[in-house]
View 1: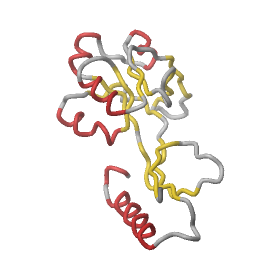
View 2: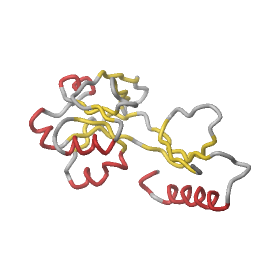
View 3: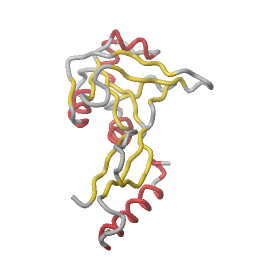
Length: 163
């Protein structure tokens, strides 16, 4: 593998990586689910809801910070019927009205725009993650890999969504 893309806040020591962009997350659910079960007003309200979690990143708790100045982190235990290691499965379950999920904003931008999903708890943010290009060597980089890295860097910088 010449290049991998990883979204994380913790890179293992010794990994060669170039940060490309910031990945923001959104808490969302289908309007059908929210009409039936109610719209959480605070992160603490999630304890009364079915949460669709990512098996690696958010299986047991979600961490929020109020957009108000000097706010503390709020760690909320979450539970639900589905935990998956694939975000597309979580998106499909949320769109089908199964529960509330926490997903990368880029992944659900069309569903939010079309009304299939609705962003909730918008007065709170989830810690953003960094999108990295990971590769094996700085010294023996092929011209093709260097060109691809430069293209990705420019592509993310030129798209206003990633700013």
